[in-house]
Length: 322
Image (cartoon, rainbow, N blue to C red; front, side, top):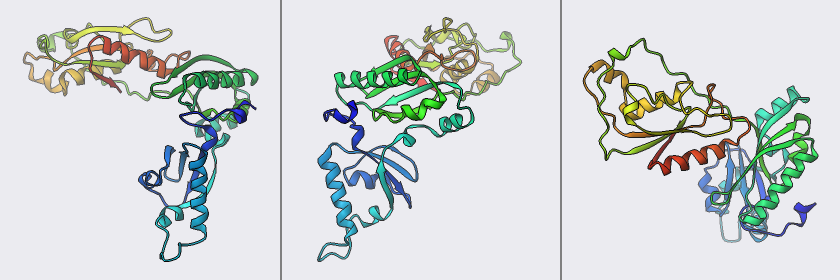
């Protein structure tokens, strides 16, 4: 396979990743002290990437030395506590690449066709990243799936695909070394704002923000920019993402966030009944639909990146993602 023939590159080499299964919980600093790069972790499982074959070989030699006991003249190995916590070491494999939620979905509905997000390791080289992405796309096609969207961001090491796949073929696709994780689409868990039985006449007078007040970006479900309390502070708003053409809030969460940014405890502001001035100015980028879902055809990372860049272009130096 091409993965076996791939030359060593900067970044993450999938063949130099080990999974540490732990007994006692180990502070991640212990891994760093041992010159190990942690790329994923939980209480009982840590995924480590080695920079190259020499580092991986040196670590195995250290493990072998530890298994033979303390060196002559020493009462104990300096890394004894760290190694004692390791139950097993194994290569990073297909079972590690598929999320628990996705495994459950496959088990319950193996005949379903699923929308999935696929995250790949980034090799650290632009040309190699494109090759790895092409390999995974070919794997999706071979499994009877299709790719709806892709994203390569070399600056932060992102290599992503949105794909449609038969559930029964996901574990086969997960055998590709370039893949770091396969998961079901994210669903933002956003609560609806509390509704108040107030009329415009009950609201205080709102003065324009100071011209030098900070500009804050809101990436959310949009805002009700015509609202009496919010409108005076809105500099710009836009809709981003496939199928989201209206920049106005159809759900309410973004508007609630805007009220918190502008006034803090907005109920106290209303109760005082005095003229008030927003604390900042806002620009709004809508990325969620009326149900607080990201567009199903888009990678949410792509929409967020575009939204953040748009906010910055409007003058925002703070961007809220909630």
